[in-house]
Amino acid sequence: MLFLSPAILASTDESIAEAARIIRNEGIVAFPTETVYGLGARFDSEKAIEKIFVAKGRPNDNPLIVHIAHPDELFVIATEVSTIAERLILSFWPGPLTIVLPKTPVVPKMATGGLETVGVRMPAHAMALALISAVGVPIVAPSANLSGRPSPTSALHVREDLAGRIDAILDGGDTEVGLESTVVSVAGKIITILRPGAVTRDMLEEIGQVQVVSPFFDPKDTPTAPGMKYIHYAPRAEVSVFVGQAIKNLPDLAHGLQQQGAAVAVVAFEDTLTEINNVTVKMTLGGRGRVDIAAKRLYAYLREADQLSVDHILVEGIKPEGLGEALMNRLTKAATHVIGG
Image 1 (tube, one colour):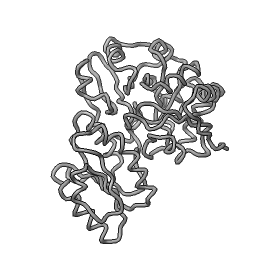
Image 2: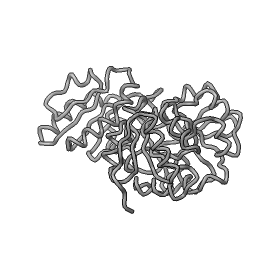
Image 3: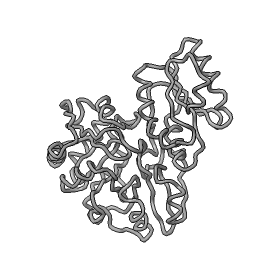
């Protein structure tokens, strides 16, 4: 399939209208959300959905998320919305929460990985909502990157991966959250977290009983949400994540690798970085305790380390609590080694 180089469209009403025209005509456009940049196509066109899988190199059993501009559109997508799901919607939409629901026949199975369920969310981003509204139908959108790479948090990240593969990029600046949405399913009164995100376990427990799916997925199984089955979020360099007491060993290992002639990037909190010198690059996750800043910076740092052609990326982990659960989920999936787990 031949792709043209994408135009980067500024944040204007005219640009949104042009992007909507492309999507209505079965093209694919990258656009900003509060989480990461998405790659959008109209939800009801198998031709357009196939373009997403080809552009990303995405396995076709990896389901997509449908994005809506208003809760009323949910009933085009889902056959049933339980009482608990309604409470989740009232509490967290618009926002970084995807709810897996039984799908209507109008949703192609190509979009759901062959499943009879579909993930749906309403993003909390003015440009995303304006785009969906202008298209006139919901849009499916995975992250706007090559499959397996760190998700894009800027328009430039999208262009790095998908130049020549998509029709256009809407530039809305850097994303606010920096990690993909929380994905949940609901059965009775139980909320199951399929992928952690900025809507945290503690927040969900205000609505109902919560359980979490193990991040260690059996490859023989069918994924019920994005990010479950395949390698995700990974840069080209070898990634080692240090947790618990092993964090104190990070400076020594960084120095040892550098002395052996390796190019080393260290991604850590400010107090840890003060103990590290003479490495290729140091990248601060901010002050300890500001997990929101760390989450917002992580993917950009992994991409920057690749651009610098480092051999090793050493990352300081955190306690998997609150937003830290989502951050560690992404780091664990990106990691070559987890040290001290």
